[in-house]
Length: 183
Image (cartoon, rainbow, N blue to C red):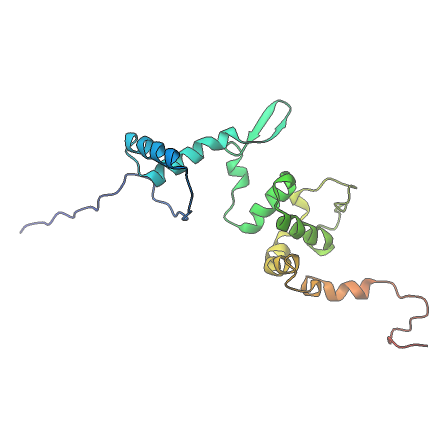
């Protein structure tokens, strides 16, 4: 009785992980030199570019406090999260200068909705320090798509959490009997 040996498929020897495609335009000289460097390291050009980007992340300083430099590379674990909401809040709270215009608008929409924030939170109008700990993450995640739609101007703010309660919380105007008609 002969036993058959299972053949393993040849692999590139790299880590097996899910990746995303990216189209990049390179100067012909840089492309050629990168290709030579990749050959020298016995990598594909794509693998070489990924390796080079990863190495360069330590050169990009995000912030400097008390003599310590926070780079993209040494902050990677704190910055990365598989959840889009968590990633966004981390950048918005810690590095607001990195937000795009559209992300700033979204952050303003989030800041304006008190029901997304903890009860004891001093509003982010300069009266207190903003930290992610004050956010109601379950509610934020639940309404994330609506918040983004409002920020893009594609939806009315009335779809946001508690919007129907907001008007009820407003004090009545003098002479308003609540029926909306004239006296």
